[in-house]
Image (cartoon, rainbow, N blue to C red; front, side, top):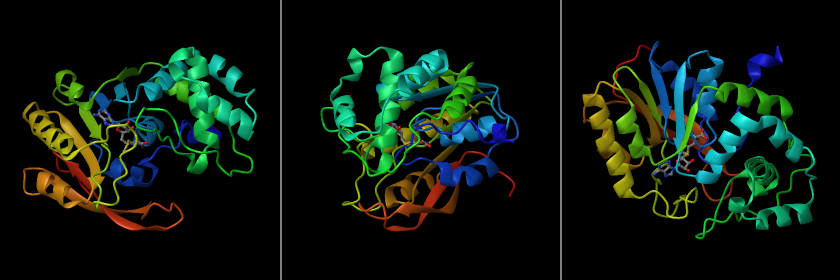
Length: 280
Ligand SMILES: C[S@@+](CC[C@H](N)C(=O)[O-])C[C@H]1O[C@@H](n2cnc3c(N)ncnc32)[C@H](O)[C@@H]1O
């Protein structure tokens, strides 16, 4: 029954939530109207909810325009994306040429194919940009990466058919979400220490002020009776923002790279915050 296993994230994304999916599903309300995910990244939770049959109407968004154009191309032109991507070889010279291309000069299927290709073949399989916003991860050491996963791309396209996909900052959700909707926030994690500052999804990072603005937004959503769930690290700032503030906060464990070396992994405590009670 391979159908049940798809759709899955088609990109490996820093901070991807595959590991927390079970914990998040446990805390998902039985019913909600619209679903919003304003930091969608690789969409691990969105695809899990879809597989569970829990999505009827959804809007997914992210600040990263290349990522959003890739989602839209897969939704609207998946066969063109597959056609382009299936011709791309696993080759260092080809990788370096692709990396040099400017996404803004490419048509949507080529932009999406480039994004997927670089993600599948680069070092550690992670999207990373420099200060100018250009993809700068080196060629990876994968033996035989599955560059074009046709079945999954088609399943992703199907899952996205009725989904609104937007490039936007997270604040946008306040205008859109209404009573009984569900919002899932997975912002860039607040670093646990000053040296562990992974903030390179976007050239300008996600600062303390943005974490504070997000907490204020959560209060505003509560006043509108919008349900939300949020995941973040257990950094002091995040505890200060959400504990003893009228929210429900749970500690959960996740296995993460514990320093800049992805091979050094350890169990870290993370937080899941909701503005509703759930039954364990
Ligand atoms: C922790 S990742 C989300 C990972 C995702 N849940 C997954 O499973 O792959 C955070 C995302 O927030 C996006 N982002 C950063 N600043 C943002 C902002 N101000 N508004 C919306 N998205 C933003 C990044 O581009 C990144 O994709």
